[in-house]
Picture 1 (tube, helix red, strand yellow):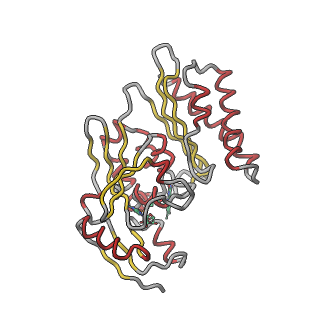
Picture 2 (picture 1 turned 90 degrees about the vertical axis):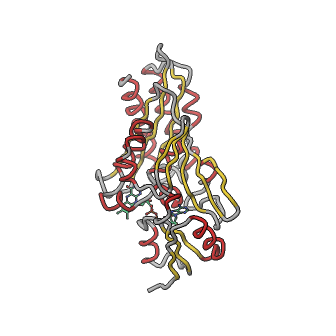
Picture 3 (picture 1 turned 180 degrees about the horizontal axis):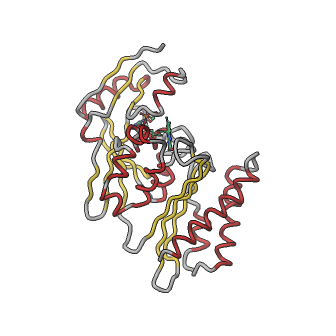
Length: 286
Ligand SMILES: Cc1cc2nc3c(=O)[nH]c(=O)nc-3n(C[C@H](O)[C@H](O)[C@H](O)COP(=O)(O)OP(=O)(O)OC[C@H]3O[C@@H](n4cnc5c(N)ncnc54)[C@H](O)[C@@H]3O)c2cc1C
């Protein structure tokens, strides 16, 4: 059994002070759905535990004309129930509803999902497809970092150990943009993703793709936008031939990152086909 000092402040300055004083040996705890199992298994041995769930500045969902700010302690349930999120980023509502079971969705937070930097984290690819930024706070001040820079390596956030995520910021999408999230798992709930597809699509009235963002999840150590695939399709009408070509290229792009592994024979064709199916559905929907 481990012992550690536990602190649950109500103010952000108090939390940042505590974090700065104990940075080397302190772990932040939000919903605890990743952290508590790691503590129980003795995978980690912190001397200090900082609970951020009581801090108002780290919660809430708000908007300006251009952007939406989602507090880091927003749970998957909060996200799924938010009318603002459903209106602006339905892809986030779909992702939130796909996570775990009701207990995990009640406790698990988006800040914890991003900070875990797990290859199979469901939030990470969706936020990447939305070109999200993380708002990081420390006693030294506040800064915004693009998510693809904040998580550059699996399991390892690229920010200081005296910093915590206070929020995620996302620019609103131009009107006419459609989004889709698809999760392939062994069961519909309580199962880690085998792979996910996050897509953002905008076409002009003639059907030409004006913007495409595509992030596959759970297939690479760190999820990333597949820019080669985006370039292949942007500026063109997505004919069946072009979609077939893109589906093949998706598998090739994955292998460029992962190399050939025991699962490649399955993942390479399935990822390409799933991409094609989900994109075709988005196209057919309008
Ligand atoms: C049964 C079960 C099912 C699950 N199913 C899914 C699933 O379907 N999809 C999925 O993606 N995940 C799933 N998970 C994993 C987990 O629920 C998510 O990753 C969740 O979002 C973690 O959030 P949390 O608030 O519980 O994080 P915690 O466990 O509290 O923390 C996780 C990590 O993030 C750090 N951290 C937390 N908040 C911050 C912050 N604001 N700033 C900096 N660092 C921070 C912690 O120090 C810790 O290292 C599942 C877990 C369980 C137990």
